[in-house]
Image 1: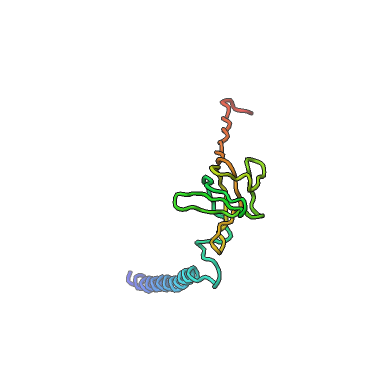
Image 2: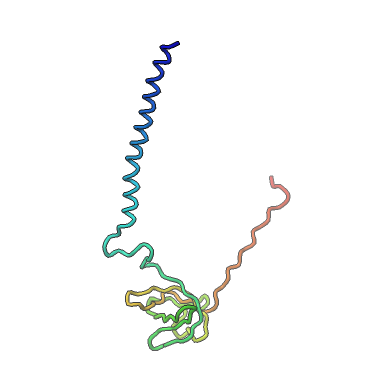
Length: 151
């Protein structure tokens, strides 16, 4: 009985050593990967915008028009925090209902919504202006399955 016990002990020791080597090598490979991901997330190329503030994405707006300047092609919305002045340009899409509109369709005390870009000089350029109240989407009723099975 003594010889099998002696043969088994070195095998167990070798398995423990192999497990230790495997976990050590796995950790040695994982740690540099973790640090490379964390450093890569902190470094941004010079001149590129921060990921929290994308430049090319228009921002939404909604409110009541408090003033319109037809000459300068601007309109003002009084918001909760501040008053915002939006510039209408040749690229601005204006919609009144389902039809196209113009700057002349934007009047005081009119509800408007849409999207705008914030330019580098701080001006707000309207990309899309929808004149009139926001239409609430009505959910279409789903057809109920019939009680009789169709074969």
